[in-house]
Length: 194
Image 1 (cartoon, rainbow, N blue to C red):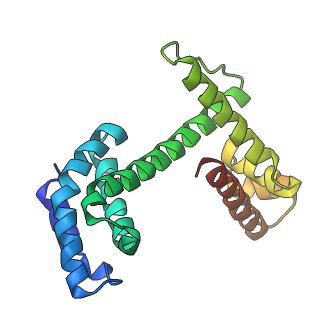
Image 2: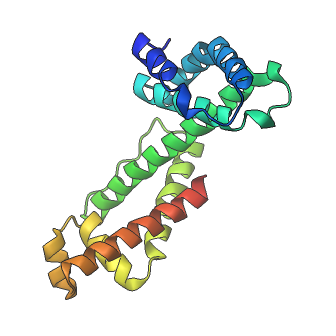
């Protein structure tokens, strides 16, 4: 169950919910209060830790509030809120897997072999390989000048000045290219895993 600080944080932020009437706000508050703890417990199991579960629940409540007008039956609110929260948690876990796979790719590029976890089933190994492939594809799809900056800064962990000097560009140009490269990699992975 969320601790008092989470409940207070939620209670102190009703001004962020401004797309419904006062009656709708009260109805939403009632529905949220009735289902919040149950969905939180589900998210604890699904997300694996308290902080992520609280973040996912808060984001799910906000998303549910914003789309409250699309809910046809108020009795279905609990299941609907749980479904929104599950999707948010899966999205969060996908991002964490992508970060982990990026780290594995970096180690492999440096000559270390990534050990295959024997406890992973065939589906999980396939998913991990698909994720690695998607990350490689996202980096490979970058234009040459962006890929060079991205590889040097984020994979080879070179300093900004060192990267700029190696590429013969200014530090400002290097930062701009790195920002664009990260955005394109992130956008491509978001499209694949959204």
